[in-house]
Structures are given as structure tokens and as C-alpha cells.
Image (tube, rainbow, N blue to C red):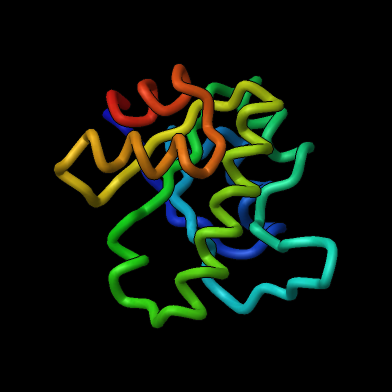
Length: 126
């Protein structure tokens, strides 16, 4: 049985991953994120990504959330997703995508966000 947990703040996410309380951690995280000019606060840093890779916990991106956002919020969320994809690629953390039935569109989205082809294929088949 797969255990899925929705991400919240950074401390909550870290505890969930450390205690291996789930198999999939779903992003976007709730709450307001503080973005600076040179840094995005996506809720995933290199420490969390490496820890999740050790414990075989996948990070999932929920496409259904994008449909409810306006253009500015959608652009910010996609930028955060790009950051999450970069962190998961470096740490070799599994990635999953939720909320869509069309696998080709999902794969195209992931590839446009600089996911590797292997990472995009695994995310769709997860």
C-alpha cells in the first residue's frame, strides 16, 4: 500500500522524510513561500532531496493545482517545479507526476522544465 502525504512547511516535510512516514510527498507545498531575487523557496533543498533518495521517497508534482491558479501564480509555481526537478535530478530522487491522463503532455512538460528523459519517463510510469 502506497502512503501519500501532501507537503506543508519545511520542518514538516523534513520530519516526514526522516521518519519514512510516506512513500510519496506531493508538492506544491501549502503556505506562503518567500522568493528572493536569486533564490526560489520551493520547499525542497539538497538535504531533503538526498534524504528522500536514501529512503526511496518520491516527490510528486500535482498538475491539478495549476488549473486553479491565475497566470502570475502559475508562472511562480512552474518556476518552483523547475527548482524541484533540478534538486531531484542532482540527488537521484524519484519523481512522479499526478493529475493528468495524457502521458505525452506530461512528458513534454517535464522535459521543458529540464528533466532528463529517463526522469520524465519514470515520473509518468510511477
